[in-house]
Image (cartoon, rainbow, N blue to C red; front, side, top):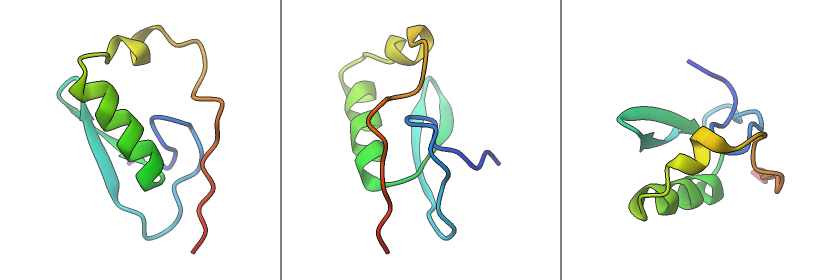
Length: 65
């Protein structure tokens, strides 16, 4: 299993088990923020964003236990 977030490419903190199904594939997320944005992208049929982006989302998540 990948250990970086599909949306922002940040490391996934230990104990976090969040996913979004993107183009019929379950993708890991590092936080509820990335999960919410990715799900919004999917819900609005904008998954081409992930196909054409040249780098991960530049606004990084920060996990605060």
